[in-house]
Length: 132
Image (cartoon, rainbow, N blue to C red; front, side):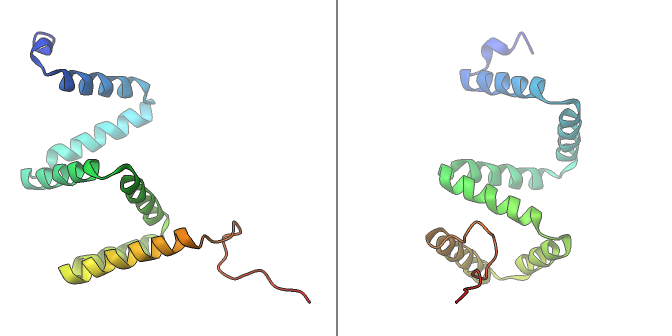
C-alpha cells in the first residue's frame, strides 16, 4: 500500500490517516469489537452492504442537528426493554409506506412538543403534589 499512497486523492489519504489514529486510540476490547463488526460486514450480500452504505451516506448528509436527533433516538431506543424494541420493529416492518410516514411525523411532533414544554428534572410525568 505504501507504494500506492502517493496516488491516492488527498481526501482518501486523510480518511485513512484518521482511521489509523482512531484505531491506535482504541482499547483492545474496542479493537476486537471493530474486527467483529468488519467480519460481519464482509459476510453481508453485496445488495445489503450497498443499502447500508447508502443509508450511512444519507445520515452523513443530514444537518448536524438532525444527525444528533437520530443519535438520541437510537440511544433512547436502545434503552427500551428488548420486548418493546421487538414490538416496535415489527410494527415498522408491517406498516405501509403511508403509515411509516405518519409514524415519523408523529414522532417529530412529539419531539417538538417536548422541546417546547420540557419536563421538570424529576423525570416524572405527574406534577408534584400541591399542599394547601
